[in-house]
Length: 264
Image (cartoon, rainbow, N blue to C red; front, side):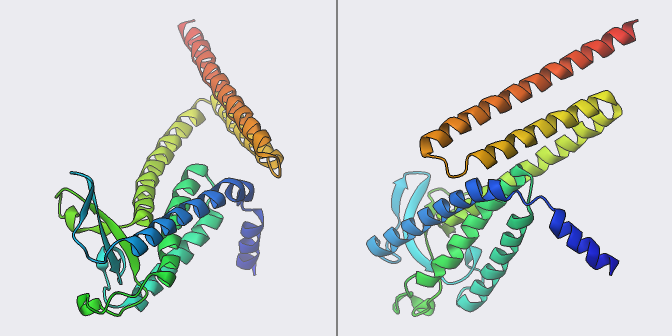
């Protein structure tokens, strides 16, 4: 029973950051997924299936319209039901992570990855059937429209055909790596501040001021006209800049104070 109560308390007290996710993350996710679908619709309606690649940016990027019945890198090709099931499981897992994710630098990366995963999953629902004359995969439905290829050979990249949603996922992986590095650096800095005593308390106040500023902004920006929202966003950035500037000055003052005490 105690375990169940602890789980209930966790769900009840967890900071889901709903305002930030609903005001910023969700609209951005929808925009990204919509852009991916638009590109797929244009490609499938205007380009010839498996035609010769067309250079878009010579030496960098070219176009070739294909339908991949498998998952990433054509895994499980010929088994769209398996690919769809795997894509659905990954998307559900990302939605759960998205719901519980709190720090913004993690949430933004997960949001981008979810946009890519969701766009590809739902894109399979309306992707055209692979033409019957397209070889062993002919007649298969439930694939994903791919059309981008690298126009250079680097570890076999020239054979990799992908789409905009795949770009989202790959960029998100890179951002997650950066977020992990930032997290590790922040933990090291936090450990240093804890050893400084008073400086740690000042740092906690600084972080609390940033959280309070963001909370007030997200509460007040709802249902405001676009012009007012833009002005409030500018004020939010300016106030955040001032808080960070004050924190830098606080650190310098603390360092100078310690230097004087040590010299005496």
